[in-house]
Image (spheres, rainbow, N blue to C red):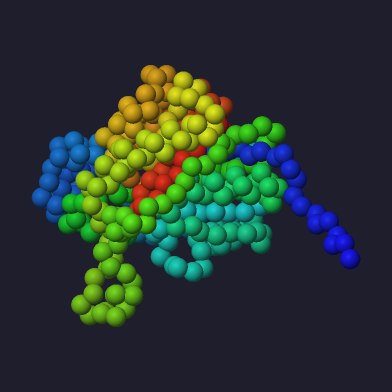
Length: 336
């Protein structure tokens, strides 16, 4: 017996980003506010990272609340309603519940109805991972509009006495809507992981450790091997960024913007130098005022770029995320 032909999703569809929104923590934290526990100075932090201030969310604002604020702005900017959203992906490593997901909670907050919703854990590359997923879902015809969010409340997971990473971390959420399009607006994704470097950026201990030793255990906090991460980001991520350009079939001269993960100003500047970006390319440098927000940093830096340079709308932007895992992801996108 001949098996019947299966119906499948439409072919020849493309995706593009149609709206963007952001939420930054309402508490401004200066370098001078945090230097005493790490025996440091404002000058030392500025020289090493480029950070002047970072933003923390208030105690009663978490990943879900920040995601909602950013999402509502992105949906409105896309000219849509929450009911138009077909799925939600939240990239986060700081939602305090392993299950259920922050994305599932957000469906109720937004009033989208019973749509698919899930979280992914890819640290500072999480937003680029989520864009890759949303692009595939839209192009395959599974969904017409996917809400992608990077959201982190890193201030809940830092040790104020740690000199390796805590002084750069911050809170925030950035959101975009990825929609069906007649023309391609998201280039092929270049993404991967290097599990052999798993311990380079990680939590000091797990919640299971705390459970087994509740009296003497300590709350998990983030640590990193700064020099190793810096070398990896500067040398290997420039190659990944170039691969993303090649995969999209464009060169540095075709770009309107470059928005890397806001990890460190020196890393951002070195990546731009290695890519030989022309002066016409506007580089996202949100880290100076807002710190490192992990998965939220690229959409937040992009939102700021478009707010300050609306003429970039419709231009091409190279974005790359990299962090704990070690994981990385990059693609060229058309700015909404």
